[in-house]
Every structure is written in structure tokens, then in C-alpha cells.
Length: 251
Image (cartoon, rainbow, N blue to C red; front, side, top):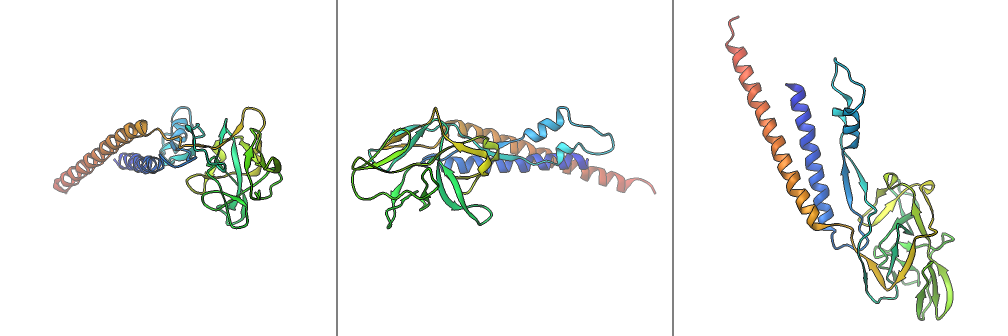
């Protein structure tokens, strides 16, 4: 009986967390460069399908909770005509400077290319993070006509002023989010982008959220959560009946 309460309770909690993730994704369906959060149950399934079993204790799988990862599926690229808007084709990321989870300033990564200039002429993200060039320094753009090549070279009045730092992340499993569009990962998990990734000026990549699929997923998850609550209620009723029966047994 206790194990039934435990398993149903964990499943209900997982369902609630997944529902929160879906709601967060839907709220960012129109956010430039937003990457979808996904909830995974791989640890539980792996333990159940071949993990060690013991007859005198609960399987370790029941003790695990869900984990989340960031999907690097591409969003739709649209034309804006703004010279400081940039989009990447292929699975590349812009490098920016910001504060990590540990409170230390470090290179971070984003696909949101809706940049602008700050008061010093530095190229910055919508959130004010400085965009870095290939040498790891902020890109400063003087006044003039801005143009960019597919390999990330920035020119002003046909004179090169910098080159965008464009990187490829080796494993998205080792990535964590700092905000809706900014990602953090170890330096060992990135490398300079080479073939297959190109820059497009005057364009932006939208969110990779599929609202229709997420709405269907939300309804399925809601029904699953309701089922778990019914199971918990049934366990509670059975426990009450057992307690009443034991209380009536002769001493």
C-alpha cells in the first residue's frame, strides 16, 4: 500500500512539473531564438528495463525524478530588414558575455540575433549582453552602413570591424538555461562553427515551439495527472477501509 502511494505520488509530481514546462514553452512561442524545454523520463525507464532488481527494497528507478533538456531544433527564419538582426542556419550559436549560474562572468550562448548598439557602440543582445567576436572581445560597431558575410564578418562602409563568434555545442545534454534564450555550458562542450552553419543578415529565427503539438501534449498530460489523483484517492479509501476493519477485529 505504501509503495502504491509513493509511486502514484511521484508520477503525479512529475506530471505537474511537465505541465509547468509546457506552459512555459507556450508562453515563449513568439520569443525570438527561444529553444524548447523538454521533460525526460529516461532514467526511470532505463532502470525499469534492465536495472538491478532486489526483492527486499523498492527499485531505485522509483526514487528518481524527471530531468530537463534543451531542444536545438531549428525555428522558422523570417526577414526583418534590420541591419543588426542576424539569424543562423544550421546548429550554431552566437557567443555573448554574461553571468553564469555560479555568479562568474563567462561566455554564454544564444540563437537570438536581435541585436542593437549600446551607448558605447558595442553590439549587445536584447537583454544587454555584449556580443563577442572570434577573439572573445566585444564587437564595437562605428557609425556607417553595416553589412555581414555568411561566415560572420562584420563590415562598416565596406571596412571589416570584427567577426562574430559563432560556435557549435557538442552535446545539448550538458546545457543549462540562464534565461529564455541564453544558454550556459562548459567551454569543453563548444567548438568554433565550421561547415554547415552560415549567418544571414536582416533576418531573425523564431521560437522552435510548435504550439499545436504542445496544446495536445498539455491535454494528454492533464488527463494523466487526473488519473494519478484518482488512483491516490482510491488508495486513500482502501487504507481507510483497512483501518476500520482492523479496528473491529476482536482483541
